[in-house]
Length: 321
Image (cartoon, rainbow, N blue to C red; front, side, top):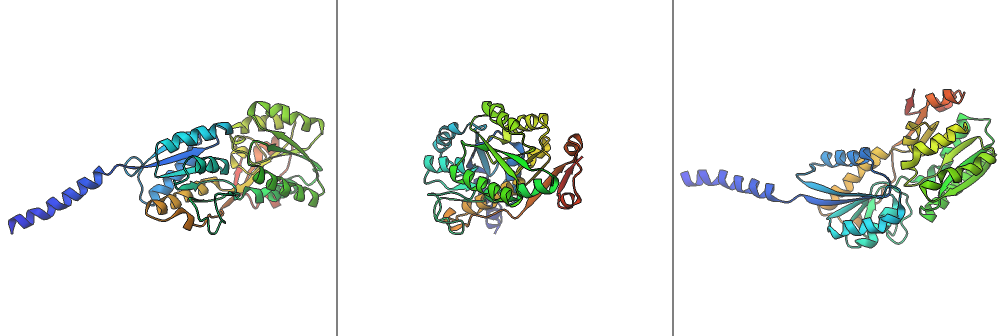
């Protein structure tokens, strides 16, 4: 009886020891943009909510392209060489390169467009090794023009900064939305293209000659890292800036509207949790965002001599004073 009484605690201790000895899962992380601590923090918060503790249950192998899209194949290969159990990617360009480098590794897109041609059958039934969330950035184009029009009803000529290094399908769809909305509000649209950070000033200069009155910034992995430079140039011309990224508004843009990126990265942890527990990526539908945010910078509005209409202020989730 005594031996049996001792055996049970000993067995429990052995199981606990084995559990502690299990090495943490290796999770790869590939982002085309510059290092963004809040995005990774959001992911870790999501993982913690599902019971995963960093260092104890998983470790991250993170690589950032800092806006240099040409580095994505190299970084994807480096991650693939580590043989991670799963890889988190953003945006879609990073997802594609990671899928090529590690075709048999599950991939969770944490932030990106819905266009994943060749990697998924559909958003509802991916059917392959890629799943995750989309920021449906192509569909926010009309909302950006609407926000600009509501904030500045007298504007007649607007500019659009496009990144030609990003995915052609996604870029084209977003610009098409911008064009349709501009026509609806009878706005003259001037588009300028750029593919490298060092060429931003040269790309924006023609818009000054075109006498635009406001600037909409297109979606780009590396525009995020150059947001202060873009906004500084625009404000020097007294152009209000509208973007789909709240970080632009934090940097001095007039306003932004788009999917809540923090919520997207949090949600990506759900997919990682499901896959690590045995689910197949192709069986997990790719989700559209459910949380959007409008951010208004009143400090910038005052500096430009603008009064933000009540129609804009009532739908602002956050106001920067």
